[in-house]
Length: 182
Image (cartoon, rainbow, N blue to C red):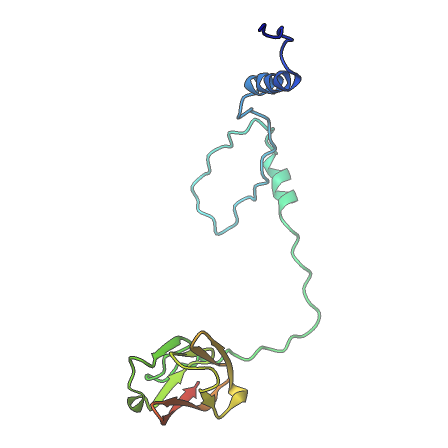
């Protein structure tokens, strides 16, 4: 059997060769001129060390033009009388026994609940109880907490200051934990 005569290169192959030829002639990092970024003149608090001259090929601005165009004019003096603001109060510090706004993990398989009588959190703190069923943990002040349950884990976020009693059942007994939120 005779082989069919060669008909020449296929159009797809020619297109691929043309694209490669064009890309081979273009350097990856062509040097194109770019505009320099605007520069603020140093203020009065700037260091006294002179800055190096710019290496850009762009024409430099005269100092007087740069100073006038880059600074904003000062606002006019206010004609209204202002009442002084009260001094900010001293930041409140948490009592020494408070944990702050942290997450406290209470793993029921490893914790003797009879020994946990009370806890102290900052607002935003979370008591995470691991290893309990849905709906078993109760709180006496729903308005101070945000609760969620997923896969055997109850998260109680303390969203407002106050005192909340969290009740946890275990082995037929109910254990209350008093949580103070500051």
